Length: 397
Image 1 (tube, rainbow, N blue to C red):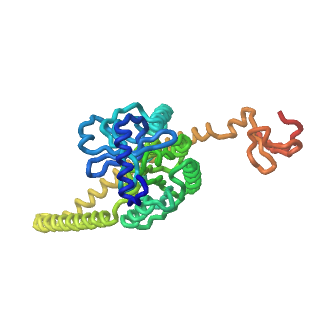
Image 2 (tube, rainbow, N blue to C red):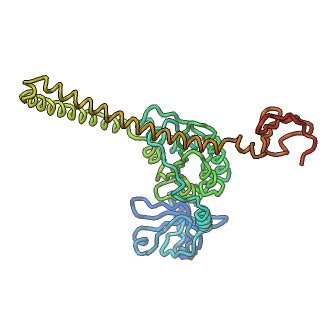
């Protein structure tokens, strides 16, 4: 480059020419990370190993020739030219061919854990609980500052009213994230009135979402007494948390839409039902009006006492039938009471005590089930079939 003062663009062009002329085309093996495919159809991703990474650009005309479905986590061999992307002054590979070398390390770990947990029944649909149709209190576990929480709150406030929300902010990326999320699930499970929990995070690469592939987190979701909706990443992203959760939402926004109905839609349904009821009542009134007019014209209305005599007879028949039904019901209820009495006698603890067993209580009237629960020389109460004993513990075994 000599002693000449170059502009940034000139320097970048010189370096680009040096790389392309002196290195040319190469084969590079690595794991795909951060795959992006914009509307242009071009593909951009990083090719990484344990220590370093390099950018890769796969242009649409080349991608169309390759029979390959690229995914984050795949281990591939890329053939292409080393070049410089001038705008960012980053060196990259212009891919000419890509071959899948094998499943990437992270993807392999994911599949192994997925298989392990599936065999243990954590993904079984039969154990998953339904999400309440009209929740009153919702817990949300996500980042305090991420787009996910803003999207969820905006949609919930727009679609529904009278909804109480408890937010437990946590990390959603990195080594410390799983432990924080697990702790948040435990804290929310201490509430008695939370109807559902949303576990949310925006999209990202397989590394960004890896916290949600943690085995301990999977068990925390499985053991939660509160139903959990997993809303991690975008629609194409799947994590272990998605498989274990009671419901998987493709995005955080979708979780909010799934969780609560739209108040405007509910109002429209209510208005429609009110109109239907109004029309039905009018129809009933008009129908009965026609029947009444028809009855007035009948012979019986000209001799009113005939109507009275017939109705008296019908009333007598109804009373007789009612008394018969009451007698039958009383008999059935007496039989049920006797059966319940027999069952209660079987479960009566005094029946057990009558066979020689006893019940022991400590000084605070707590039931003693283990010898370790009382102290030496402590007074205890012994309940027998007839009467009680006050005793003192001399020895424990």
